[in-house]
Length: 330
RNA sequence: GCCGAGGUAGCUCAGCUGGUAGAGCAGCGGACUGAAAAUCCGCGUGUCGGCAGUUCGAUUCUGCCCCUUGGCA
Image 1 (tube, chains in turn yellow, cyan):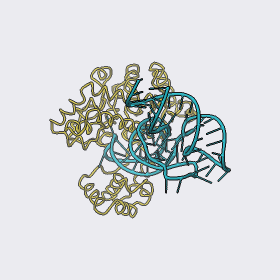
Image 2 (tube, chains in turn cyan, red; image 1 turned 60 degrees about the horizontal axis):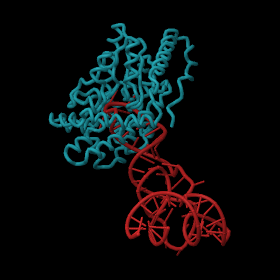
Image 3 (cartoon, chains in turn brown, yellow; image 1 turned 30 degrees about the vertical axis):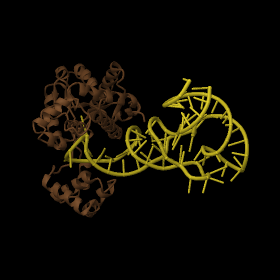
């Protein structure tokens, strides 16, 4: 597979803006790597690209799933890779744009070979945690996969304990061993990852402002419509930020102002977790999007150089890792 | 101008009778393989308004000054 250009970074950092500029200049098409923008009818609250933006370049994996269906990293990986192949078959540049760290990694680095979610099994394991306690479930994990158990920060990370036990129950193989096997034979797609990150205070300003803009754009009505269509329970399951708060406002449980403040706070924290994720990946080349033309130029320069190194794989490219700009500060 | 209340973390505030300070919220760092906008772990970030004085030692006691605030004028 030919190289792809990925634009990653926290929410509200300016990924969309930059990626559209790049798509136009590189004859590109965009594959969204966003776990929430996949849902139909949730465009406002997930800041999905607008029709105008989608008119500037073809977009894939946006607004195509009903909220009563659950997306999953495995399905995303499969469908996104198909998109990439099709785009390249058309002779165009494939751009991956999104802030869902796991999805970006699943797409670019692949997932281990194993089973997807088994809802019934998970329900049983969760029930066990509720009745016997998290420690008891962790003890079971320690029995079958001590390595993974030791890796977790706490028995309270029930989501991961359950997943590890689920995979072991379904395959008979320790979760950590499947991970190790995948690390030995990764199915990577060559990719340049551009990280977009404004200074922190500016990022928070943008987040706060954008939540206000979402409200102004009719987010409350969007949620009202979803609830009317019977999706309230699905929204709880999907857990996209803000929908639960606005639904609570619609039920009269809190004021709109309280809801908005909470949503802003949740987005700020989410941005921090995203930065934590992407900063850990040393392949990411960071740039500040405050000056858009400059950022576009910088990104294009990175990309040109990356393509050059990829086509002359002499190990010569290894030394080029130092000048990607500093990590986002603080 | 007079009387009263108060200046302690980014914010709201706690700090018996002197031993350089702690809660909530906000914030910061980290982990992460099919729920990931999920989930989990960790971290007080401080001229205690300022300057003197008493004291072995002052956020705490005394004096003066500055600022905020309520009332009376």
